[in-house]
Image (cartoon, rainbow, N blue to C red; front, side):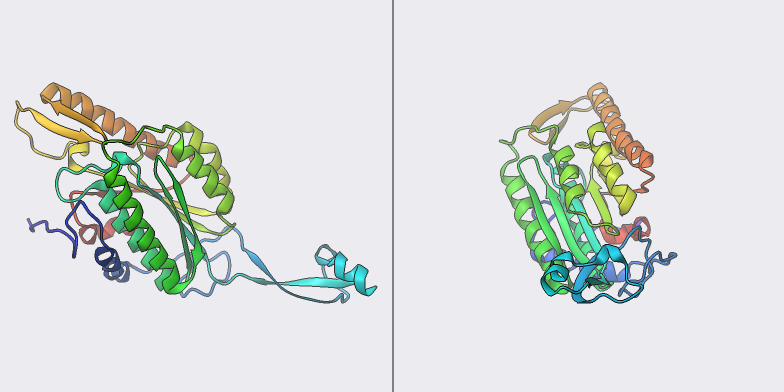
Length: 309
């Protein structure tokens, strides 16, 4: 069995820009996605598109055969001659990442905090979008704020994402012992995402599943009608029951701002609740016909490339 080592520049708890910049190497190692295209894009890979954005180009005089729905009535009234609007198809696909950095993800038993693994994944998906000539945006959700990053191209898109993730993660670490639970904050994040996502966007959801409830279904269902969507569930070996533990033990656990000491019976009960929460998130994604991939915070992302395919 190969030795499990920390990713480059990472300490497993804190985040820095160097480790998120290094995720570009993981993105370069991802396999090329090949799928039937539903619209023509500037990117060099085919992708499933459920709509297309149209960007205004110019106004010209109306010609026989033009769509009457595109007549510019203001220009027509001003000039006395019929004019029509011309549009061009937006050639770069918007990629939006809904990154859950709620305090439930600030948990780790082996290699990384789940929040750190989520950040690494978001940066990797971001780099992949930039490498494929897509526009990159994000919505970073916590109990206290929803930070919106408008889709931008090339280096501007990835650098704004990296800077925002590092800043929000640092703030969340500082609030670990003082934050208040906010059960509906992810519902509001989904509502906001529905408002900002353009038809044809690709949306990635990254979460541990703890903050999603049935109220999130409606806005996500609306999104799924016009956008492509994928989900990643970030787990931990202790929350999966994958760590070998003695028959009898006293295990101190810090879960968000809760400090617990679990014996065997207490851990078994706690574990069942963790598995139930994860299953509920997966089932919600299944209702939306969204494929959910699972990533373990006990392993580096580079060792889980198969889950990114």
